[in-house]
Length: 244
Image 1: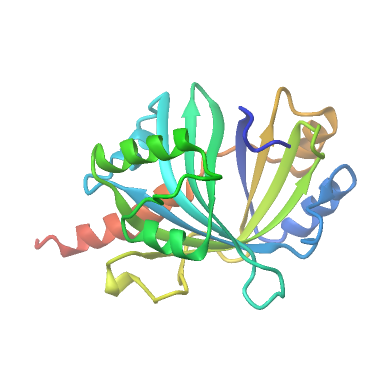
Image 2: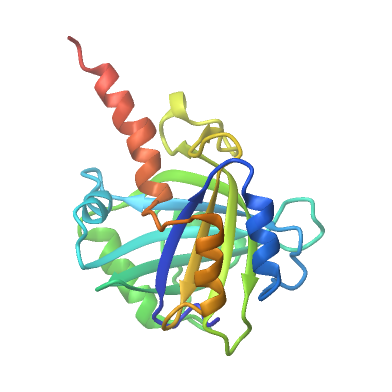
């Protein structure tokens, strides 16, 4: 599936003990990402304003909203090079599209420090302009770092469905030493042995997938890793800091 196409997304939280069976059922219809049959790590840094505007847009269901994040794909020590992107995730009336820029290590670290790449050769000037606008109105900076292990299955370049399974989802908070463990996010976002299944589809889901939902008694459930991290840890920490 083309990540730049408008698509609909549905999420399901799989209870303990169900991941293996659901993955096996999906493998009967889709193929795993080539070279990543055992999955791979994703590390994301989510940007927001001091007032957490992006979070509140999500909570209130703002129809047209955009979020900045970075992503690092790949497992350190696996022998495969890591790939780094700066992304804008745009949701409009229930459809989702990603706009992103590939970056080198230096550009990536500079962006996390508040500096956009100056050299736009081989980059999308329109995405850079959009990033500049979003970063300053209102000012935004890294808030939460989220890491997980993903298994991904796809229907191919011309296909209309992609299904991913995210496990061991953890977070840490930028600039908050009491909730940060350095490079390794450590605060869990799911219960023990739970997993997130995310379905991205262009048009209706295929009939076989509807049958899968019935077999495993699955219902879609909104789950934002970023929003969950704030609710579980940042907001809870603020409440506990308020004197009685």
